Image (cartoon, rainbow over all chains, first blue to last red; front, side, top):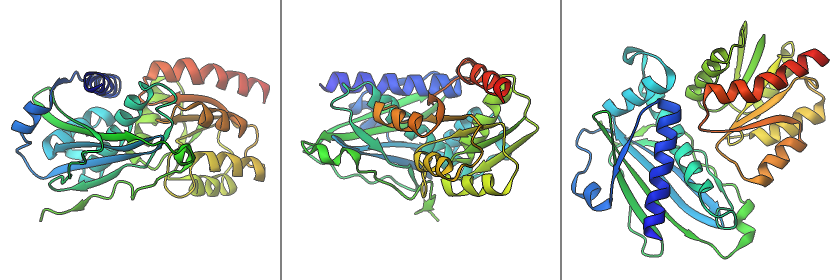
Length: 178
Length: 129
């Protein structure tokens, strides 16, 4: 289960970054990620929630330099034209696409869920560990930049929740860093 | 050609516009809306575009509600609408098609996918107009 989870997440990241950014990513497992936290704050933290049979959260975190690189590649514009708002927007969109790509690799009956709009914050990402959920963190390297991806989820037995759409406050780069 | 791009992400609106141009569409004007409500306002107050591209998951009125409201109000009835979205579940696709979407493309997407999926339908739509 854990190996499939990591493989599917890695495939989702590879697909999104390859197709949308023409960048190749290499992933390392959770132990490596935990021992090598991102070291250039402030961070952009994007989250997308799953609601339905599949419940949980996909989080993507990277620093400003990485955000500038990713936004530049995605939009095809130079670094001097890139604002924090555009970086936050990019973080949300990439997180959303990775969550969607990961979800579509699930068996259809288990993947029945809706994605929320992305929620983006700036600052240190704080997550509690929930022992009732599958939880995996990947550290990805791309072209000299690093990003962290975390996925925590479980499966609900209540099919009625499948059609409940969860919304976030999309792309609100609320900063906890002065 | 005039296109209306509906997405709450300014980055994705730009990405979609670039993909349309890369696919060979000559866009004289690109109208933009951040959700379904804004898109309806554009359609009520502007000449109909030749093409509408819409996301589904947006704050406020989402893409499916936009399609249904557009159909109910009879706004730009002959204009082809394509959904570009992360959501790929069959019920959502069917609901979008039932509400008038002509095509459905999942993110992530390449300009080649845009060309292959949208341009032929657009040509047929313009020919029958």
